[in-house]
Every structure is written in structure tokens, then in C-alpha cells.
Length: 128
Ligand SMILES: [Zn+2]
Image (tube, rainbow, N blue to C red):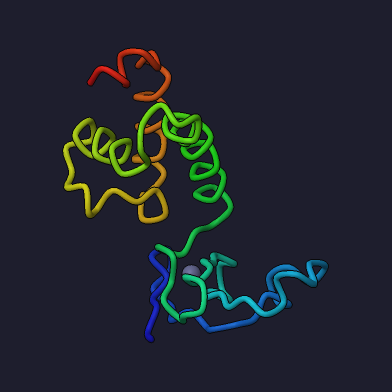
């Protein structure tokens, strides 16, 4: 599969976890796409060579962590199903649910997710 880096346009190389996380023996078998010029990378869906999303540099990786931290409690507590939570998020963002994957978001979208989740009380989300 050809994976192109959105930052510099280079073609990313398929590498093992050993390259990305040299100290994590548990990730050694995993596959990643790595852009050598800018150090952006993305993991693959389990057991496949399909990238989980776009290649992420350190700024985008941090933004995705923040987005997940803000959004995941919406469904992890069992208040609603994961699919319903993503449906709500897609509505709020004005995108289709099938396109609503934090792994595919850019920094601006990740920041939007954080703001949306912060200003929406849990009860309101459950009733929505
Ligand atoms: Zn690059």
C-alpha cells in the first residue's frame, strides 16, 4: 500500500515497531508507516497493513491524545454506546459518521472535539 506523508509529500516506509519504539518488545511485531524526512508515523489496523489514519507528527499525535481523552469518557462509562457517541460527535462536527474517526482528524478537528466535549455536560449528551 502506498502511504504518502501529508506534511512533506514523501512516500512513507513500512517499518516494524522496533524502529518506532525500540524499547517496547511488545510492539516489535506491529507495523507502522514512517516518513523518514519528518518523523511522522501511523500504526496499522491489527493484523493488516492498512494504516489507522493519516501519518501524525508530534503535534498531531498530542492533539489526538487530547481529543481521545475528552471524547472517550462519553461512551467508556457505559452511558451510551460507542457508535452512538460517534454519531453525536459527527453531528456536532457536521461530518458523516463514517468519516468520524479521531485517527483521521487533523489538529484543528482534534481541538474542536476537545472544545465540544468540554462545553457539553454529560447529562446533555445522554439526552441528545
Ligand atoms: Zn513527511
